[in-house]
Image (tube, rainbow, N blue to C red; front, side, top):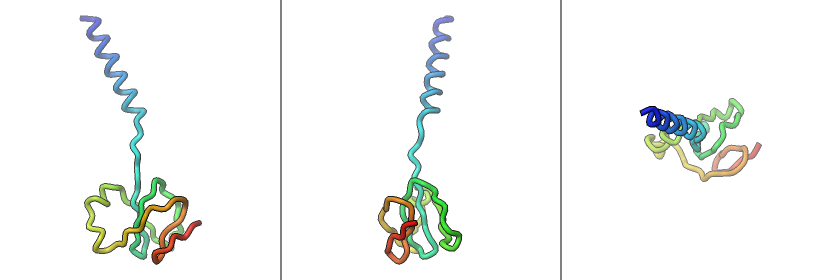
Length: 89
């Protein structure tokens, strides 16, 4: 009986360590004041005048963004979309 308790405790401890070490891949949807949106993996600091908003992927899947926003392709590096042009900073 004591061995069964030890095995169960070890299994729970192992599961806890595994769960704590798993990091979820988070992605953000970024939309600017001109209604352009794109994906990013980081929450960069943008100038306040750009009025950038970050959303999670759940927002992207649920929201009817097509009525208000234009989707732009993903782009590497720091920057933002403006009138269909990627501007780096």
